[in-house]
Image (cartoon, rainbow, N blue to C red; front, top):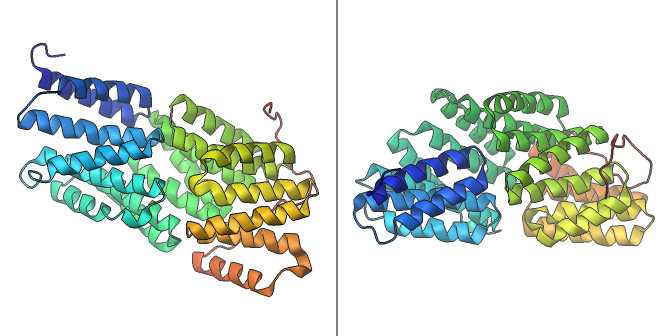
Amino acid sequence: MSAGDPVRTAELLQRHALLAGRAGRVPAAVRWATRGLRLLEGERGQRALGCRVQIRSELAGVRLRQGKVEEAIRLCKSVIAECRGGAHRDRALAASLASAFFVLDWALHDAGRPREAVHSARALDIYERLGDLDRQAAVLNNLGMFAYYQGRWHDAVALYERAAEASDRAGDAANAAFGACNVGEVLSDQGRLEEADTRLRQALRIWRGSGYEWGTAFVTATLGRTALRAERCGEGIELLQEAERTFRRLHAVTDASLVAAYLAEGWAFARDARRALREADRALRHAGRMAPLLHRVRAYALAQLGDRGGAEHALEASLREAEAIDSAYELALTLYALEVLQGRGAAAGTGRRRREIMARLDVVALPAPPLNGEPRDRPREAAPG
């Protein structure tokens, strides 16, 4: 560290925070960033301003990973307010402003406020002017994620592929692997499971080889869900448990909660109804976008336990939640479960609506809803409840 020069020391701490954040070491990133901001208290001048907004913009991304969405939004807005006056003539301020726009949209989506997420185009424009291909790829990946959640899957795949091309041009194979991973996730949802598995394992090889733990955990979770859909429940649950352990060790709270919801679904597919119900009820406390899935898991478990009325009630709740977040795919999965549960008594419009969604999303097959108690491929060693 540079004794006697607090700004220089803060710049070094900012670099440590950046590297720790990119490696997925969340607590370390927070420690470095907090120390840097403390050193800059009371410091004036352009260098101090540049360092302060850079640390805040990076800390916003880390806080988002921790599930502290409102704090991430507050940090982004503070960076935007400080940078706007000088970003057009200062490269460092421009980069921090773009980072704040990028993280802000991500946080707004996580907060259930997607209509307010209108800043990514400005982030992309700044990164293009700066010639920063890696950050262009990050924004394009996020834009792909937003399109994915909005049910514009063709647009999502195109954006993911543009992101991978930008990373390839930058010579960054690890970032380019996001393209394979994200396209693999769409293929899995579409029921193209073999193609999905190939793409996902390509990303897994790259991220394991580069030691990128967060990416390894994310793609492992997606492989787990793909295995569940192929009725390889034992393999799927083991992969999801591995991913959840990694996310919890990295203190990536939001991602760990996502995988916990997938695990509840996994226990339902494995016909462990009581555990599926218990895990779904627990995850519903912090459900967010996972609410449609978790209510559907409750329906699976209740049906397996013989409570048809409770299952129908849970599926109605899942439909309401899917419509509230405008998730066509979740809607299709729940409509399919209703068709199977109600059998000949299902309304004709239910199947028609489900088929229309599948055609729009280019889905070739949906996983069969596990509404009976017939055992499938159970985990070899189910973790204790």
